[in-house]
Length: 286
Picture 1 (cartoon, rainbow, N blue to C red):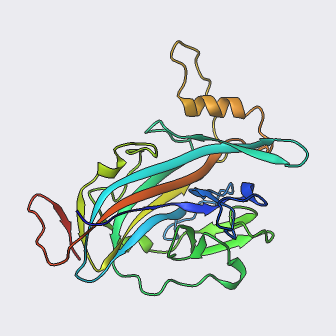
Picture 2: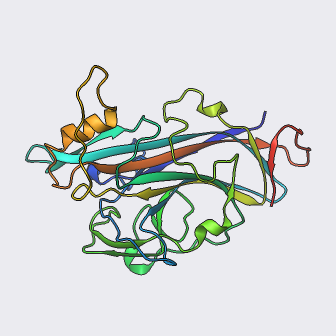
Picture 3: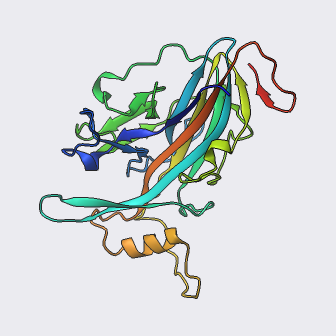
């Protein structure tokens, strides 16, 4: 067995500003996953990209003649809202981890993309007026919300605040090659706290390439989406629907529950170069 590495999503969190997040003196307040902006980009007409946020969650490079086994993966998504707090903290985010595999909002959803990518070359630099952590033009070396165009009403240092315009990178998906048939997934197939995540996959990949996990998020609009009338019964509604119904009555921001955070993890095992793949293994080549 070769070296095993897990790569996961860690990103800046505006709710932690002024609070230490680890003992190493990290410059930016970070937490699990990447925050999803509340702003809902308007729908674009083809051939322009859709109004979906594209998040790069985790990735790892495979060198020329290198081989790597994708041992497993994990998915993570929360819904949430900021609620009133005391005078020292204007609002406090309250989140619920989504655990119902097929949950989605009436006007919002998430798709997941585990893919092999050809060598990317140099990572494009941030544009001058959007040099924000975890917010990157076209591509990124780490977890980030990727953009083609974006605008903000005011500078805050946090990409999820004051966003007024956004489009995802153009034609990025054209280079993607699915890994283990997971190139376009619309449900939760492995949970964040799954004890079997490290053995959920067994896909071999040959370099040079990059193996990446992306999430495409269509943010919900609480002000315009339909509100279901939930029946009362012995089993009750799914936890996500119950959370939405309860938190709508105490929302401080006035726009209700929305997608709050998205994340993922990939578990890799390095394989010795030059050895043939076992015939029963899945092999993905350029």
